[in-house]
Picture 1: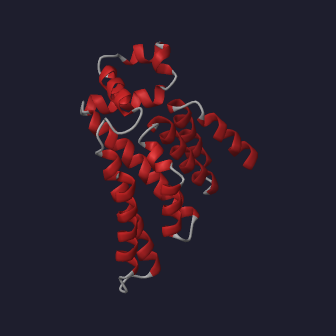
Picture 2 (picture 1 turned 30 degrees about the vertical axis):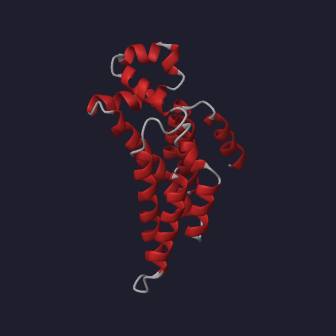
Length: 194
């Protein structure tokens, strides 16, 4: 159902923006992206913990992280495989203590980074957003959020490499690897590409 709502939202955004003759092409693209990704952000950020394979588990981990010290988090093997993600959980928990704040923050970061990558690498926003929804990255982010979170961080790092901002790209890449170790594979692509 959520997927159908997103498709309807995407079509609505496209028709609304491109029917507005007062906007120039660049303004239309920006407006479309803002509307489309706001819809994606709110749907992902406010979903129930019952939506997605891992969401309930991440909610439990978030609650558990509130009772674990930073020292324990670093020393325990169960946490340090994904230390970046756990540290982010711990920091958000320290500031707010509500899992949904964390989930919404992940949604904002995820959708912002996809927006930046798509807007920097395509000329057709509607086609790009169709591919984004069609290839399953968005829906996967609601199932295996830590892995897809690392992927979109690497997409952003890729853009930064292309913008000759290697240090920022390196920092983001290291954080991505600290969230999910499979991100190491993408870093090999950087080495090959460069």
